[in-house]
Image (cartoon, rainbow, N blue to C red; front, side, top):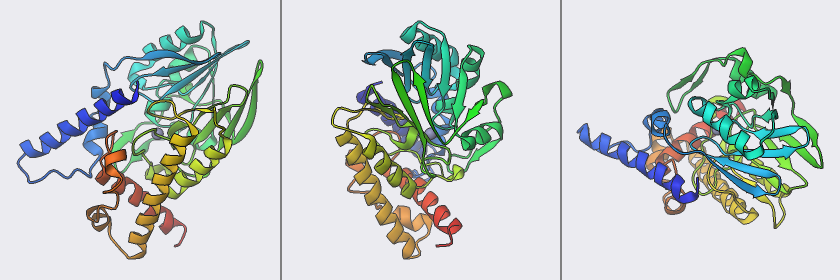
Length: 324
Ligand SMILES: [Zn+2]
């Protein structure tokens, strides 16, 4: 999906949410609560098309209502990064097969979220060996509860679980060498970056949402300081021609990623100062620390209030657990 498409989805859902708040007649809607938005996502994305596009020679991009998917065509079959939404798994699998026309040798999960690992079981049944970090496997294997979204994710069936866990690896697929790198907790505690070194392509998972405020999963130990550090790590891997596949949004350049990193660092520093001043979550949201950034970043999925809630919650949890 292109950026305009993403903006349309985001605006449409946020708009519906604002109207729902007014119709209920219970005062101005709290536009900082992302739970209804996320809970409505499965229904809202039931019919979003899944598109297959060539990215560079040998790599296709599959874009639809879930996270972005990369497909490398190699001599021993396809190597796929991320597997899309659970209720669209059959169509996602078809799209991936269209991209390569070969058996799927392996699937790499960038993290455990349902819009990235939701197709795991279908891919495994199609013959893929699933690779991920140990933290991703553990979270998939157990029931999860995402506090800010008030969302339960039941444990995945055994067939959906990664069979290889790793923190760092080099994977050789014909002429391509993929570098797989975990990072300290950022979006979750199991994020994996996939660098197609010969093709100069990076799949960032949800360490990067191109063009709008990202999700940061504090219930999985994610936090905005980790997101800044991860963006720095990603930037070090990039050159002027690198194609960056974000978890969500259009394919990006190094400059796009640098702008995103600067936004995250600014928000981090402002939230850290609010926390230093002893502000509660409500006070931090009401201080509107992202007001000047919202015109650029808030028209994707989350409002500035939602992003402040998500990021402040994670920062406070991180600082509390670190004893700061
Ligand atoms: Zn995610």
